[in-house]
Image (cartoon, rainbow, N blue to C red; front, side, top):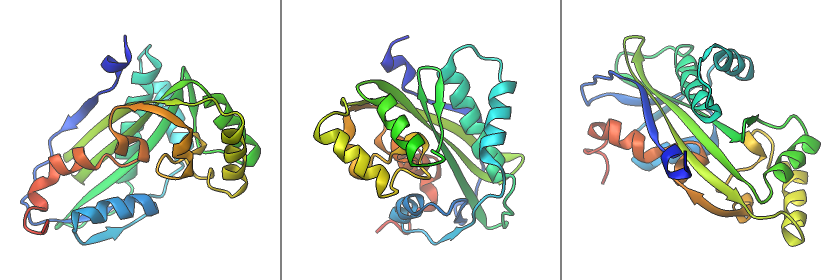
Length: 225
């Protein structure tokens, strides 16, 4: 399977029904996701989900019967977004949006680094290679009324040597690699490490705004000016 065939949007569930009068409730405290959802000019309530993400992701991956590492990881990532949604109380007049992002290098999942040493090791493992970034999303009103999907994009890093290696070390030392899957945020200075991407840029950032808007566009037409 070539890269183009692997870069796709896939819905695990598509049953969301809404009136068009709902407000958006963001199930995240991530500054970048808060900033991106604000582009839709919709009032936002933000709530952090309460669950052990790493533990649940591993359990989901173990339970999925799929040989392809990317497909298996992508399904687990989408299901984790749904699991997040199920931990957050949602008001009748709200639609909750949750998301989770994972990085896959061959068959190895690169989570959030535990320390600076691990962060630099992750970045060096990506040097000169192609990896896949998947963001899973859940648009949720209740357990019977939700959309759950994932998008995957491919990223190739430049070789991290010379000035780029110095930049990577500084990026890690300044703490910018922490709390990010794969130890980098493409929207930050780490974007300099990227040679090319194939797929949706916002998926790599961690919030596929275009697909979310397409699903929920009816909520924003009145307030989009």
